[in-house]
Amino acid sequence: MIVLCLEQEVAASPYFVIHHQELSSAGGPTWVVSGILGDGWYEGEVAVEIGARQGVTFADEWFDRPALHAFFDRVGRDQICSALYQALASADRKGFFVSAAETTRTVPHCAAGTGHGLVGSGEPCWAAVA
Image 1 (tube, helix red, strand yellow):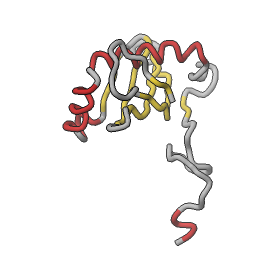
Image 2: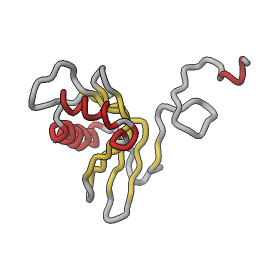
Image 3: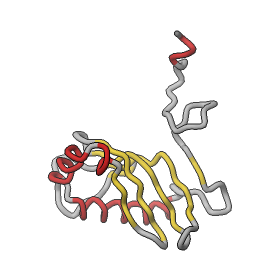
């Protein structure tokens, strides 16, 4: 989890939890980092591009626009995008990203034996106990 530093103080500190990262070479090398952005009242899926391309895509612009706009009322959109860029630009130096020589696709929070990004807590799956 990355706690985002904002220029303007807000009631709750926004955070970003990375669950997927991928190196894209289309149009120049760019890391595409996907995760959950939240502040305690809102959580939503976000993809951040860092590198040759730069951009932030909020999934809730299509799925839950009212909740996203309520979040932007508490934390400005430009402010949150700037904080994401700043945190992820410095994250590379902290070793959050894998190198290009390693695999370009990681899913650090996955359930053992699955090919998707579900969080595994060690308990048996519903199918195993049903």
